[in-house]
Length: 634
Image (tube, rainbow, N blue to C red):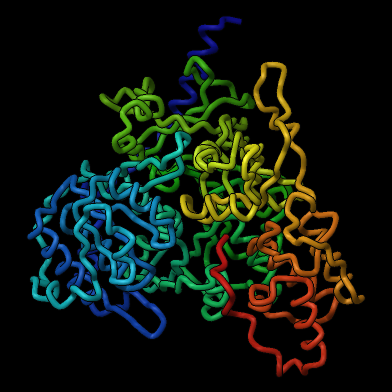
């Protein structure tokens, strides 16, 4: 066979398959919003509990913020931080920054102050939109804080008319920080043109129409929120902002409260959680579409909806932050398998996907290679990271467009003979836990900074199917070795909660490969000895405690459990909490409110609650929808 001819044929087919050309408006995101305001000024745009904003009200307040920012020198290519909890003020702030011509940097107020300070300094923020209770988080950053609550009286003096647009589709829309392998997060620079391309495509592909209701339940620092927040506001729909407290439980309550949502954007972990809590009769007409993204999707997690809500569209959306949320989608079909990974499908509009070998040549269908992404959504690069940008954003040799680039994803993929793309995993050490992209190297760098840590490694383990968690392995120093609790507290001061390992295992030395590197495949599974915190082991004393401990041991994959061990210190998280509550319902015939597990996170404490509930009539059992010791995040 002629190797050169085969290579040319593969390239020709790849380029042909990548042709997804579709005209898009040559405007910025806020201009599309302003057009919708003109069409439906009195329609509801934002709902937050009992509060509502119409399109006119939202637009006018955003305009006032924009004029206020412009008076302070804000314009195209200027970065403005936005650190606000989910609220109407958050939407006003985001649109206000865009209308000013600037780009926003989303800053989650729940992040550790040290991480927020780094992002503010790295982005060179001169201005920051926040609220009084979060202002202290940036006291050392040097940014001028504009509080949308206490400063609103001054902001309200500005004009409510649309400011003249100064930004273009080639200007920055936002810079969103993701985990970085060097130990520090990195900011991906997203352009208006790429964002508009994704949003306009999503509106058509997901069938959003005027009046559509979409819940917003995730952080603005997670680009999943882009899909929930902007498309409804560009078609005359409304967004329902869910309170920060109790996280995923608020989403569950919102979905039960209102049927026929326009779409719901969730991660596979969200989907599994919902499947644990919803009864079959509840899922029909819950949402027109579930758009699922953030990590590998398994068909097993779709069974509830495929069986009991066949009209609900189930769409697997793939895409790194560096290419605007989603660049590839697959809609599950009735005849598709009911087990295994769901394909990631085909590229969205004006997007090119190539599976290439080490020489950047397209591989044959069925052959695995690295996935490269080209087209309208490719980011400008990483803020202040020219070397990393050069490594990850390469010249596009296939499109024939001057200055076009490909993003090197680090993902393994292959094309099926029918042109459908399959995701096969990662090439590097990057992992995804509950939808969050995590560089293990960033955790290791921060963990190594602990004075009591001699050496360390962090891995993502899945010793029990469906329960993937981060585990830190530590060789402690000889002087003052730390405890597992001390290690986790140390990391919580530096990293978001989703990056803090659930378990910490102490070793005398690391197993090594023949080349002298840490043999990560030989690292031991977590045992009770690694996580026990009690000075004296107290075994279950009653039959109820023994049965409850057995449930915990099975789900937590532990050999023993002290009745006073804290569920969350043992590595428990919200998805596992849902499973425990469901198992308790089966074993004890008790409908245990989820908040009870957060308020009584030990076998001893929970056994008392179960014993009490077993004597109550069903009407006396409190609601399980909301409440809890801490926010439930997944």
